[in-house]
Length: 122
Image 1 (cartoon, one colour):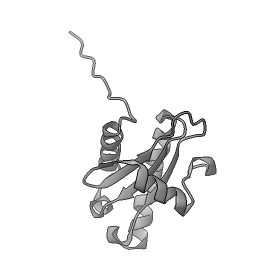
Image 2 (cartoon, one colour; image 1 turned 180 degrees about the horizontal axis):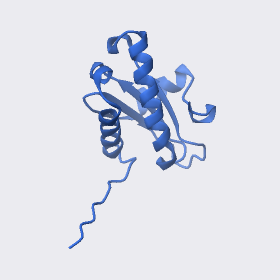
Image 3 (spheres, rainbow, N blue to C red; image 1 turned 90 degrees about the vertical axis):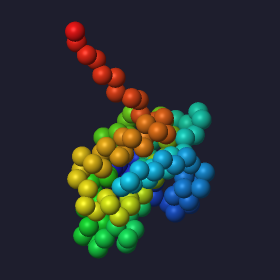
Image 4 (cartoon, helix red, strand yellow; image 1 turned 90 degrees about the horizontal axis):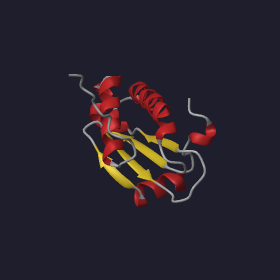
């Protein structure tokens, strides 16, 4: 569970992020991000998992997985960033690792997550 200070909760906030934020789409999910210059509040996240993803049990399972993945990454985001993660139908059958891969790729594309550098030893 995300602490209340780290959640996007109001419909106006969702609408603002979806309309004014930048978007990075992947096969299983899309990430919309709105960064505020000079903001000092914590990074926040919200989730949109519609009926096209599946029945109630499936939607809640996808939401729990996404919430867990985003919670691990919130501390690395710039202060004041608001994310909305929208699940697509293939998210229903995806593993947590596949969702994490798509989430990280979307965050990198939005330039919110640094690339992992690979160090090779001689």
